[in-house]
Length: 319
Image (tube, helix red, strand yellow):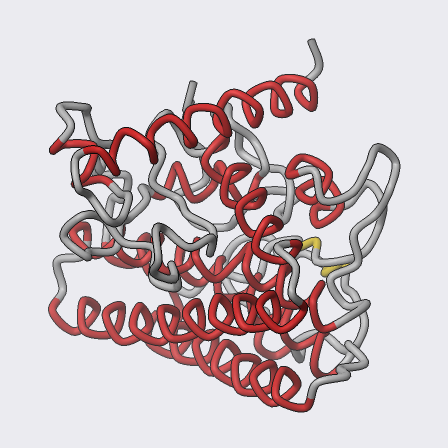
């Protein structure tokens, strides 16, 4: 069986598990789904492994993700990648397979996109300055529109496009928001999962500050998708977020923590929280599962075709 078939099979299994689990949790009176809900139900939560060897390793791991987000938003807003003087550092500097500027039809979405692009650019600059000579170079990144590229592969795995079709996150406001949805929730869980691994107080404060901003971004993207879905009078955008969420869940292990924006009961689900209204986190390995688009322990793939730079490189064996 090919990796793609395995992934599609896992997606179908995860969708069924997700439906059963939501129904079970509702019978317990749990309004939101997450790690604490699993524990309350007597199921094991995903343990956070001490993946990192130093504080610099943790921040460099985060810098890889900031390079990815910054490149995506910079192409969407400005039509170009980041300047080369922001990409140098230790390790192998890689090229970017980029996209193109989005012809935004909604000025509100265009304004949001520009704000996030500026924030992500500032995050790259801040982390590089904080790390100094220890900062990694940008690895090879794929945020392009190639039918065999990362966005298209992720969209096909989620069922958003069919076999052989491509997904262009720069082709419309809605596609841009779905492309952003792929990244933003992952960024929040990455910083949440990494927080216990940092020992330096200054670094902890820096990571907490970026975590808060990533959470603002994720909420903004989720709210806009939800609003546009309501305005359109269809569930298409809402269903698309659930498909992406199921795809992420199929990659990062057996725990079903990830959530789209489909309402739970009579309430919206803008903030994906557990039963204590706490955000969940991912280990570095789980984060790499998602950005590498692999449920196996690998060192490259997906949005990072040659892998990330730094000492934290391997995704987790999530099966």
